Length: 424
View 1: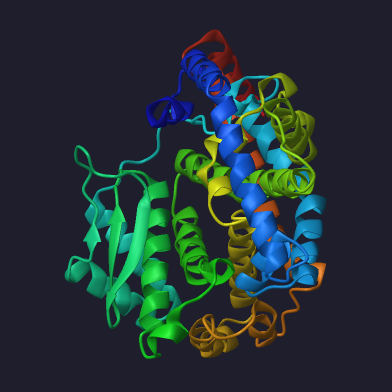
View 2 (view 1 turned 135 degrees about the horizontal axis):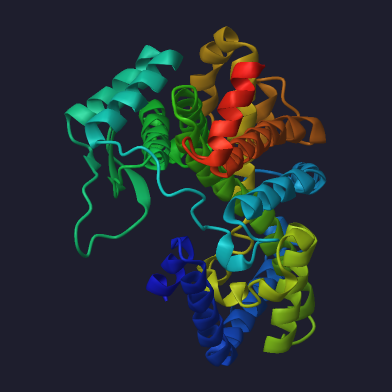
């Protein structure tokens, strides 16, 4: 299944479509036992939450993630209001791929033949340059990670894919990443080094004070990733820009639009499961309805993913293991926006904010920056950062399409254009 799902990034649309169909058929074939497992898990979570005094599993999840219902509602309301901007990105991506609208198997498709090929040494230098623009402490932490070889970056057979950072001892961390020679891997490297920086800041505290909730786990990593991404985008070609923006917005769609669909699905699942077992047919209907509410008509209704409830392992662990991803992204982007507005005061307060991620509620923590996470205003500020990226992506797509449509020099059209330019 991992190999089948990885084909969603293949440039051949026919192969992506065939892989998607094979995946759906496989989930459909195994749907009954998976649905039984899901019903069992959600039934148990519902009973345990009630017996522990919670009104619902969501209330317990909010408590464990150090936020309240008002903060969650403000974030979700703001995200919903910005869905049209995500839809603009998906429509622009469809144009770049030459299709009327995207199918599910097009969401991760490459928009260009490739970007600049980066060496690991060049990527390290870019990360250090981006970090140095912020502070010497952040730069020095990353420099030490490269010098002391904290990072397992080489790709090799049987090595797990993805990226991960774990604290080792005192202010040291270790990072697993499979380096690929693309600009998007650079931001992934910056992301994991952000986690390492967060751990280094917390290292002066007692062990229990270093444990932070999932909602705040991405605070430093998203900030560092955005810092380096902006640095790369300011020094890149149009093709590299297109590829990097697409990769960034793919991730944002996953963490906002798709997370919203997963949250809506799980809310309804808990509500129905409290009364009776939920059969496969209803799970499929609930999933496609949730995707329709978030992706809208910009995603082909005949090619959504009705079995995402079976494909996502998050549903089979802690309840509502979805909205913390959206919170982490938007909280990190919101902090970056504050940094852009007033770099000096941000630098003075940022490390103290990271120090408190394991001991304070998110709302209390945010108030240090004059941020009210129970208001939609902060979240719309974060989403505005994504809106600007969508604007930039649309412009990059238009330039790319204009270049591909332009007559090649030496053809009749090219000679005519040169003559017109000379006369003009």
